[in-house]
Length: 494
Image (cartoon, rainbow, N blue to C red):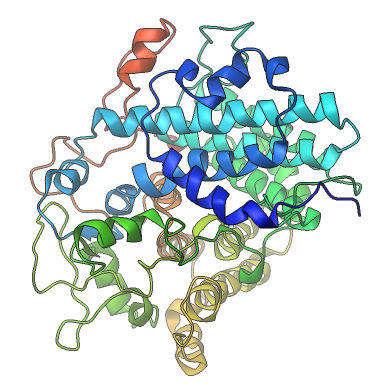
């Protein structure tokens, strides 16, 4: 297989330079490298696409997902802040700051999507036979749009990133976005069917492994189709069966992860927050009562990897309380320098397939559903116990995993369909631990488990969306009117 020249000598420099760049608030395209490149793509036709891929992943996607959206861990009620500073108090009580939404919008639409557009244009101009690079870009475009619609609902999609033709793009409805994304993924998958030049060392997800990109694309497509099935199952059932027969991320070793590393400047920014402001010791985030109470009831062995104990017990904190003592903090096994950002996981794929089988979207019935359900639990154990999600020397003993799978929580084949579905949804939500936007989305789709109303919350019920940034409202008259943040999104089908 041919590959674009490797950048091993500058790989560490890219991590440092691009990550630091992601922390800056960019107020206009013209003030950044992306602006000069994207306004007239042909001006920058000598830029190497290897330099754009880490910018997309670090300063675009993972900057959003780890810096700005870490607060969704609390909104999904996996975490609960134990420090009473405004930066923790406000989002847990649903007061979402303007910098959060502005940075999120810029990271996704400028740092990610416009640079992905540029990757495609540069490749078409300079190396048109490198179809795999086009495929990589298309899959990441779909992932970026998907993240954006899960945060804001209606977004620019059909007219997005094409600044010269659509300087003030229209907003597509969430239904239009979700129905359009599978076709965008299919474009990417088509470009990945045959070996060509592909980005390798600058590909911080898969190192240029084409088969991994195909699994990621299909897995993302399955997740989108299952969101559509929440509203209109008949319209996507055939597509769900078709993608279920394609290569998917089914084992924890195949997870799509951006792996941070434990060298200065390259660490996970959540750990970086602790290092900068708390001496590297977690006094900021504890386990939420909602999650820990469920795990205590089920004697879930993942507790020992995820949380610290308080006098031999696991103790959660209610949302909106911010107590500094007597709470099980998120463990150093989790908040650590090399904590990965998980783009797609085998556990989630298996739970989606379990639901699809149970509801008759794919063949196999309850037997297949039970198999996928048990695999979903096992792959969560595998990832956090002895996979890339855990630190060396920390694992979930096999005997504990086997005991959990042997408990009533470990199977659904003797349950009613309603009880089985609730167990699938609950284990899906649990397995999304450290995946804030996914965990929040899983709850919004399934409404399992019951969540608490945070103390002194500024909304009357659970938050469902973020507001559009003032910068977009000011610049684009097509921006939709304000929608109350407790209003369910289209995919929730309420």
